[in-house]
Amino acid sequence: QVQLQESGPGLVKPSQTLSLTCSVSGYSIGSASYYWSWIRQPAGKGLEWIGHIYTSGSTNYNPSLKSRVTISVDTSKNQFSLKLSSATAADTAKYYCAREYSNYLPNGDYYYYGFDVWGQGTTVTVSS
Amino acid sequence: EIVLTQSPGTLSLSPGDRVTLSCRASQSVSSSYLAWYQQKPGQAPRLLIHGTSNRATGIPDRFSGSGSGTDFTLTISRLEPEDFAVYYCQLYGSSPLHTFGQGTQLEIK
Image (cartoon, rainbow over all chains, first blue to last red; front, side, top):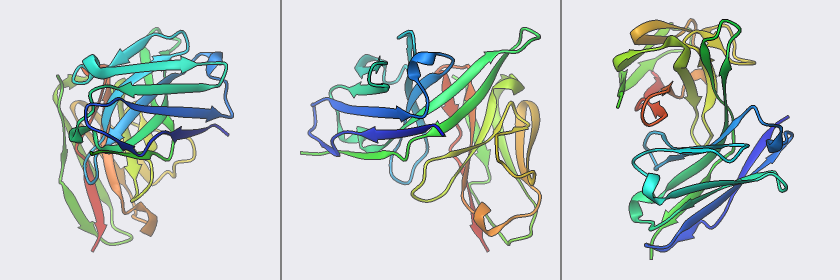
């Protein structure tokens, strides 16, 4: 059974870098096939995709956050990480890591299977 | 940027009711790229449907999805007490790569 667990400081000062790690168990990140995402949710609000990384290290970020986001992967530790620089109060949210899968079907069409495994989430508050 | 608009914002229903939730895209999208999630208070979202109409592993058959183009729906044929939650639709493949609707709150009447 694949499980994801977020960890990191619950409180970050404004202008500092928010850093979180997602530890994966039950599946080897190095096995490829999946993308590994970060998604956040301010209290009482909707979901915002931050970005993802593939095993190879290739990344894709939300353009609204791209200038401040870095996602990296450490296959030896079976973890992937999020760094969000220049944090402000607007970055206060619950942060989730999630696994996503997409692939080509036999007919050549590309198909998206969704975020099928999620961590429980960790709340980060940006405040002095 | 494609915007997903879910309606209604809140629905008050009773166990046993049938419900249809709407998700409308601001432009035509591939049905292969539309998913639905359920989120209960204090929990992470759970994948219900992918590819517009395909139930994820372990999802009961009272949940079904349909749609094409710009209009998509999630139907729960007979509400169980555990189905009262927030439901999000989600699109892959636009910019940003993943976009969520704002959610529909399903509450007990």
